[in-house]
Each structure stands twice: as C-alpha cells, then as structure tokens.
Length: 242
Length: 242
Image 1 (cartoon, each protein chain N blue to C red):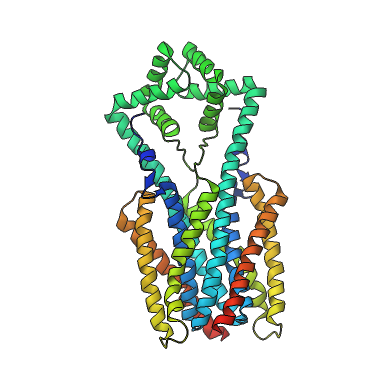
Image 2: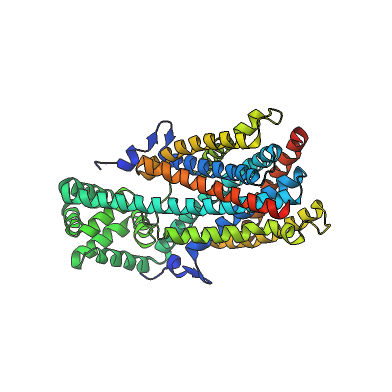
C-alpha cells in the first residue's frame, strides 16, 4: 500500500499519537476538576487551607479513579473484540455452512454474482483467518483498538496529576503565611490554569486534526465555564449554609 | 445474515446498549468524584457545610465538563472518520490507478491471484461506495461509531448528576442543624454510595458482557480505594495546614 497517513503520523515527538489523546483528555479532566475545587472554594470564601487540602485530595483520588477506570474500559473493549473474534472462529468451525452463506451475502451486497461470487466465497472461506477477519469487519463492523490498557492508564494518570496540579501551584507555593490574599491567589491560579489549558488545547488539535485555534478556544471555554459554574454554586451555597 | 448478536442486544430496557456504557461510566465518575470530596473533607474534619458546598460545586462543574468533553471527543471521532472517508473518495477520483493497486494488494493478501484477482478488483472498483468502504475497513481499519455526540453527552450528564449526588444526599437532607455528627453522616454516605456503586457495577457487566460479581467487585474496589486515598490525603494535610 502506498499511503499510510494514519500509520506514518503515528509518532509525534516521543509519544505515539494514540497516547496523545489520553494525555490531552486526562490533562483537561485533571485541570478542570482541580480548578473547580479552587473556584468553588473561592466562591464560597472557604480559605486557602481548604483549597489545598480538598484540591490535592481530589487530584489524587480522581487521578487514581480516572486512570484505573480508563484501564478497565480499554481492557473491556479489547476483551469484547477478542470474545467476538473467538465466537466467530467457533461459528466458522461448527456452523460452516451458515457462515459461508453469510460471506456469500456480504459479497453479493458488494456487487458480485454468479460464478465469480462462488469463486470469491471459496477463496475467502479457504483460509479461516481471512474468513473470520471478513466476518469481524463486514458483519460486526469491529476493528481492533491498538491501545494497551496499561499504557493508556499510565498516560492518563501522569497527565491528570501534572496538568491537574497546576491550578493548585499558586496556593501550595505561596502557602498559608505569605500574606497574599485569596483573591490574588485565585487570579494567579486562573492565569496558570489558562496557560496550561491553552497548551493542552493546542495538543488536542493534533489529536482531532483540526484547527489549532479552535482546539484552544474550545478547551478554554470548557474550563472557564466549568469554573464559573463551580464559583457560582459556591457563592450561592455560602449564603445558604454558612 | 443470520445472526445479529450485537444488533439484537441493542436495546435493553429503554436504553440502547451503547448508551448504557455512557450511563455506567458517567455514573461511576460522578459518584467517585463527589465521594472523594466527602471523604477528603471527612479526613480533614472540614465540616458539613464544606462537604455540601464543594460537593455540589464539584458535581455540577465536573458533570458539565465531563459531558461537554464527551460531546467533543465523540464528535471528534466521528469527524475523523468522515474526514478520512472524504479523503478516500478524493483519492479514488483522482488517484484511481494507485487506489486500484491498493485494492489488488488487499485481495492478494487474502489469497486471491491470477485472473480471479483481476475480476475481484474490477467488481470492487466498479462501485465507488464499495471501493471506499473496502479502503476504510481494510486499509485504515476504521469503522463508524454509531453514537450521536449529543446523546452520549446527555446520558453522561444525567448519569453523572444523578449517581454523583448520592454521596451528598445524607449531608443535604440531614442538614446542618440535625445534630447528627460528621462521622455518622459519613457512614450513611458510604453505605448509600456503596449501594449505588453496586447497581452501577452490575450494569457495567452488561456493557462488558462479563460476570456480574466481577463488575460489582471491580467498581466497589475502585470507588473504595479512591475514597481511601482522598480520606488519607485529607487526614495528612489537615495536620500540616490547619
């Protein structure tokens, strides 16, 4: 085959492209989750200690659960493919005539008929791997996802923790005794988070193969709106509960 | 075709099976995120008001960002498929000979040769739709995901909010003036969250087509460990910062 756009773009820098997707979505989730704690706490005037404590608790718990959840769902999707494939092998062995008839119908739908159709069915069903491969792609419309569960989970975790810690940096480094007030720290946190989201949003456009500005705008808007929601809920509930 | 396992299982109760997957993963994420706030706040003894305020702020902000993020990623994956398909149509129109040679190589690999191979190539390339369809499945190994972005996003949001609010129910209904102390509320919250996770874990085994007990155990373990991490981080940081 002459062109391999998908394959040749597979590696960008040190990452395989497929894992950039995990890096991007893990990073966006991490930053938004942590920044939501920051914004909610700021809206409700809960103080710097609460931001640091619940920000970090959430970062670690969510980073863990996101990446383990990602492991299970990637694995489930692989297992599902393998199970269907094993079932097709079983059917080819035990229900050969029925499966042969299915191949015939698949190729009939492609425009084959008469003696040529017979010959095509013979060649396809002569090789069990080709036969099953045809059933998987044409009947079940399933193709195997090349991602390794442990790798997608690791990239998601690392990205979630790194990008997700950015909204907390100002609070952690300024500490409690710096004399910098909450509103100023919130400003620093917002700027740092905005920069991080811009970088991740730009990376996202590599994954989606879309305009880089659209990727950045989409990501900033998403994070900004989530933070505004959190701030607003915190602000309203402070009046109710405190 | 005679059997349609995947298609005939498509609807379970009122849900299409594909959306049960969004319901399950949205629900697990919602419950874990909110329960992490509850556990972290309990570990750090931050009080009931903080749990309610940051729990709800996080629930709404994360539910929003998860589902909008889901919308964008489902849409990106569809757009990616459509873009590759459009490119294949372009190549079939403008680089006909090259693309025909690719079809030849694909069918050679399946075991076709000689005159039969020529005839197969002629039939496949006689119909542009069949031709492009073959390139998509065989060369790019891409099949179209039938999910609608707006539907996956809606199911994710609703599930995230419903299941994710469960860890907060005890706090919200007992309120601040009930006299029930934090440890007791945390116990109720843990039990309710455990029940919710059990139900969602059971539903998960429908999605993954695996043993129901494995699905439940996996989900409970994941949520339990995330909550323990959050509790532990809260507990340690309380000593440092408060």
